[in-house]
Length: 368
Image: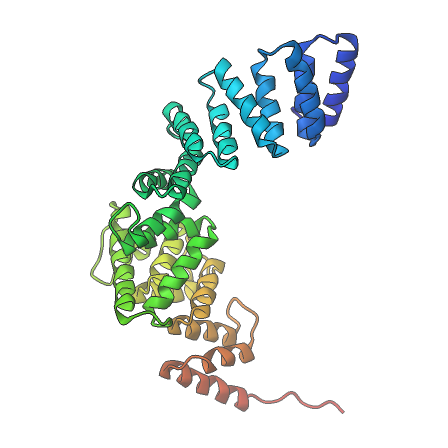
């Protein structure tokens, strides 16, 4: 089983049981091997047979409960888990599983109690803290839920970071603070949380005036992104700011921390920092010796994201890349398309230049 060959292990356990039918360890091992193979019915059958003979086999009962949960037999799973905890009251994993079973059965208060038992014994359990926060939210106890979301978010739980951002955006259990919402959504988005990414896109669209929101909401969005950029410095107390236009990413580059600098510059650029946008354009073309290569794929991805959202500077930058084939296949038609759909004088000026150069380019000779 340690080598991942559960089928061989199951055969060995069956042979052992043929020779020694009462050997507890062999039947327990067979149940576990069957579970690893995905044979849930076989697992339940073997472990129930064992428990009829040895009801105090706690580990076997816990594996049985896990198999019952996989079968979505929640009432039976809950009963086994409660019996496990009656016999071994400090088993953290059993409390966690009990929380899942009670939640599935609609016993939200019971789930809350189970998760609190987990955290009383193992406070670092971010998943249990997130689950507790989620159930508290479902019972409309936002004042209790938000601190739990925040604790799980600080521990790096991406879904909790999304909910923490939402709590600050809507004032759920905390004072409304859009800048903090942006910070938490950004962290969650960096971990691949799609909901946080969507929330940030929607807020940027509001700040850019591309939605039908009231002017006051647009101004609030613009201010929130400014406040977010300012607050970002507090996350790097070792950095020195050189003037009002300095960026955290730029300061990281000056310290030779290019691997950190690029994602931070992208966060600042997506928060409408023109110095960060300019720095990314220069970094894409030139790179930073020993830190960031030219044509960095992360920066190209930023250009595409910002261009898709309608950000003028990114659309112009991306058009230049496609027109010249810099880090991307040369595609003049795509460059022209980007610029035609960008109603800005700089975009239209570049469109004229590209169109003129395309018309002036000699055509390929026709072969006889």
